[in-house]
Image (cartoon, rainbow, N blue to C red; front, side, top):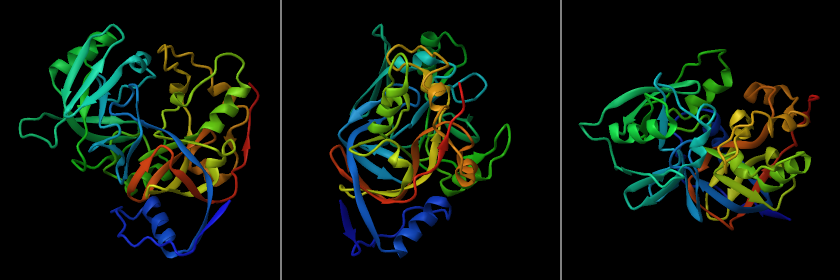
Length: 343
């Protein structure tokens, strides 16, 4: 089913401030009339207030320049930093996956499996007495607000790791600076120039995966199946064929928002962490993804490397609402070619 959107124009000013990959994509969209095909429906929306912890499944939210927003709070507004000032993820602390998160008005409550609770105030802005600290998120350097000793003690005790601190991001408080410890990748630099005020997401403001892609992967796994939570997306789409999302250049949701596909999501060891048990098996589903989901096209390899991929990273073209049950329309391009390596 194809819907003719020839009369559809984006009249609002572009919300993206920097001229980079997403904003250029938005300008290209704005200048062209397109036919969008209906490709599926939004089946789930995951909101991660604290990076690395459990998600809150929500029915609606907003797509903004800085990411998925629910009731005024951005996705991944909080994160944990280790004693070296580096993002602490499930790679080194897999039991973070067991911590639940709840939001009541201006209070964030984090609970352990044994019932211990931490309450953190959700402030609207930085206070004069807030402590601002430097930190590293993958390839980027930035600064954030330290949430205090009580929060630090809670996580240090739960993880049995000294020096862990809880940090808070405030919109556009400071730019993230691309400063990799290893090989510099030009496309990663492009991404950061495009959105230097990104919250605590690794690469892009949004992360989308389709249920059929996860189902296809499960059909090839020998033992335990995985869920979409192994990949920690914001948006889950159903009603399409496996991995069709790879080819969606622009993604329009019937509630009003418009995203652009920036890259295929390369996958790391966090996908091997069981979200229900917090046990990192180090092997699956990565081993199986490597057998059939490694890109071969030079432009895709430039963006994400010759690494196993599932799901896409997106930037904002037009801000707006998004809701479970939304029809999803896409400007569909060629399906990227994939290969695999023997296990």
